[in-house]
Length: 331
Ligand code: TRP
Image 1 (tube, helix red, strand yellow):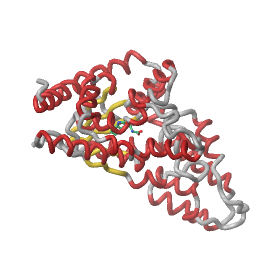
Image 2 (tube, helix red, strand yellow):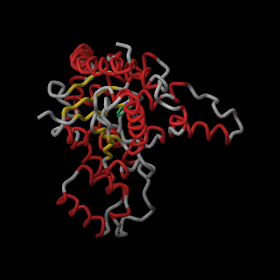
Image 3 (cartoon, rainbow, N blue to C red):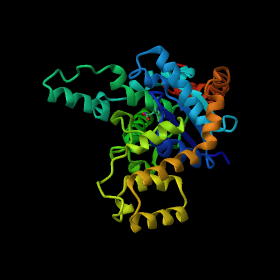
Image 4 (cartoon, rainbow, N blue to C red):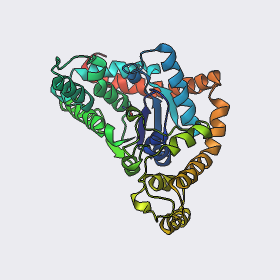
């Protein structure tokens, strides 16, 4: 029996952080056991944000090395760069013809940009590129080309997966049941990964704790976490603490019980609580970091891994695209 298909991508736009790991990488790799898997680097998606070739190239290698270091098995799973699969772009062109503009008008990134412009009494489309507007269309092609069943994503990407579903339905209405309808799978933890300022951890808030960086940098970010102003002696409520909330992702229940007692007993400063957290994070990632340091500058190796993955992905992609092209009368 053939397995269902799981697919997800990460955009290479700057340094990866704990939110990426807990929200996408970890849950996706856990789910992977039950599926046939496609993991990719969404490099064409990043062009809309990263305007420097050198930077983008670095970011692509970084994301690649992080995925591999965190346990992505590139022999078992198909791991590739979006830009290696020209069929994705071809499918995006085809899908554009069954996608109503109104559907993309509702895309949250486009809407946010437009509302910001209106607030500032600018032209609503000021600074809006077609790359931004079409982002959900390209993402739909990423997903639909591989007949994906499930897409593990953070909460902010659910709308995009729903748009992909709508586009697939529009295509199927015209041409028959050709494209599979995908479903988003959201990991609940992603909603509660706090950044150092207490808001959701996100690059755009500049509140991240870096992933697989030097221990010093991890510690520095953790020590900046916002807390209340309770003194050392005061008992602290773990349920109300960002510091404890983050600790839970990296510890077992026994460790959590013990630390909760320490919080409630009083006598522990926030500095100490943060040190405990930082050490825990560093310890949790120690093996991943070793692997990361080993491969992060092995560019030929990383290229080779992605190249092999692209060959596998292209086989599936070209077969599926050919079917679509037949259905529409191009082939
Ligand atoms: N838009 C996703 C993000 O910003 C990345 C992405 C691109 C993606 N294409 C995808 C995720 C397809 C899942 C499936 O995180």
